Every structure is written in C-alpha cells, then in structure tokens.
Length: 213
Image 1 (spheres, rainbow, N blue to C red):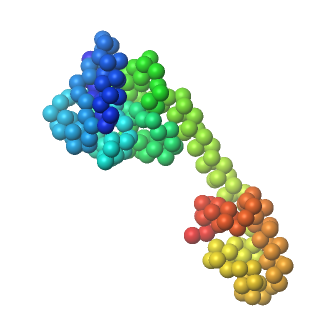
Image 2: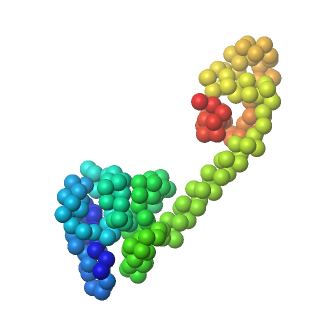
Image 3: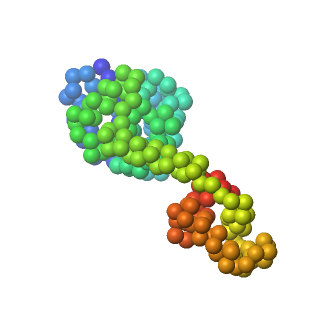
C-alpha cells in the first residue's frame, strides 16, 4: 500500500482528492492537513510514503513545508499539486526537494501515475509543467548565448558603464571629451547589439548579462 497524506488549505479539495484515491487498491489516504504545523505533527506520529502538497497553504508556504519534509523525512516523497503554473514556483519546489509537480487540472489517471512514479523513487512532471520548464531552460540558454555573442569596442564599454550610472548624453560627452553626436552613435550601436529599443531595456539586459552591477 502507498500511504498518502493530502496537504491543502481547502478541505473541499482534499476531500475530493481523497474520494478519487481511496477506491484505488494500492492507495491509502491516511490523513489530511491544512497547515505546516499540522503536517509536522502528523509526520511525527505516522508513517507516510507520499505527501500530495499544495504551494499555497494560507499563511504558510508549501515551499517551506516541502523543504522541511525533505530535510527531516528523506524517505517521504513530495508530489506538488498546485494551480500555479509559474516557472519560478515549479523550480523552487523542485529545488526544495519535491519529486514531482502537477497542476490541479490533472486528470485522475495521471494523478495516480504521478503518485506511483514518485513512490518508486522517480520524478514526475505533467506535460504542461515540462513545457514550462523547457521554455525556461531555452530562455536561459538564449541569454547565455547572447552574453558571449555581444562584443563591444572600448568606447562602447565606457559609454555603457556611464549610462548605467545614470549620466546623460551631455554628461557622458563631457566626461569622455567627445561630442554629443558621437555618444548618440555609440548609444544606438549598444541598443542594436542588445536588441532593445530604449535605455531602460538596455540597462535591464546589461544587468541580467552581468555587464552592469
């Protein structure tokens, strides 16, 4: 039997999931918790195989609960089940020790498959979650690629630094003893190299790529 603990601050949700899982021959829903403190007390007194955990627990964070379980009960597998399809929540949950992440619109068959998969020591992400993760990785690789492709002249580097310090065109021209027009030319070249339309976008990407602090 796979002993399952349901953790969600909406009782109607835990009762609904329990009604779906209880008839399954190799599943046993042994408890339902609404808060982080209830989870701690329950785990201290009961043997659990899989925790089905929501991220939003009212005043508590499922992210913190996940880390607590991972740190204190390593054999227990955490399967996140949330309405949040944001990449940051997914990656943080996985980083905090979750073995899987599925969305609340998941069907009964996939939910059962996910529980069995993490119970067996493997990881599981629904197709939609995997697509979100892959888009994030692709975006990261594109940023890293851009970082190494951008090449500056010495003057462009100087002007980028001064733009980052908030200097105007005239102030940059005075500092570097060049004309306003020359500054504007280099500024245009920088916008083109970063593929942005304005200075705000230039500064944002320059900081992301590590050119400005």
